[in-house]
Length: 342
Image (cartoon, rainbow, N blue to C red; front, side, top):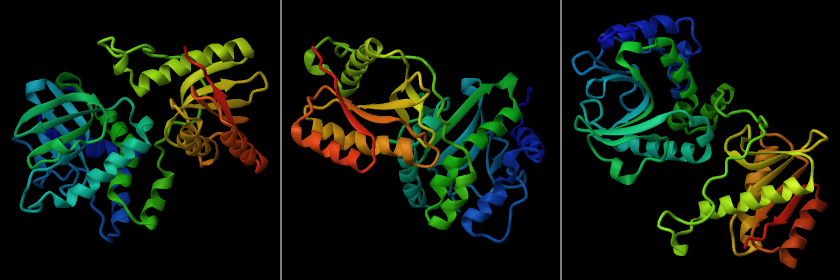
């Protein structure tokens, strides 16, 4: 579809939404906000939230919210669609203060549910210019939380290939993020439960191990936690391949947020989950990995594993061994794998 009128695009989205899951957005929004009145459309063409001259629009009522946003970026030759924080003061938003706790909740969502945001991009405008080019979705930094900033998260298409059905699918996929950012009460968050956002647990045989040596400058001092994790994963994979006839997959979606570092599919059809934690002491590795493994296996949406295993280069000391044995005595299949590195 080739359109250069933001009103025409918004109208088409409104019409298509009548038969789409996202078409119930304003009703959901009213429920989340505890409002009795319900807006009729996503984009109200007669409101200031649809700006034909500047080529952008956000959902009706979204000025003080994480807003569903569309826009024509002429200088970039593309059409954007997704969600945004607009830190531009206006008559209805004289100060950006109401948006600050929402940005904090956005950052929390990114930390906890980053897997559900794969495939989306993020970029930042200020006073009509892009100040940070698009990257994978990440936490919003302090230097970006300034008046006149426009922080966008979503996707883009060429101006000659605008697909309004794809826009609605994107909006639907970002609905869980919107709800998390815009609600705080337990009663409101209850409504979020029916919105899919986490990728289901699905084992895939694969290994995507990155650099396992040093930083780019080659200095020993520059080795990072991430690189050390890759070293452990590489060595652990070699150990497991020589020890059993199962299959290995890494970065497997847990089903309830996050990704499991390494999963072993056994011939019996059962799975072992490994959480890798570089550490000098086994105690510290256990402290970091244990809550993640328990969540992957037992929180709603997760997949119960045969064994939950903490993997680290730190040798297992007797006190930590006794602690894990006590947990197993209570029915928790928690184990430790020492992965020695050269």
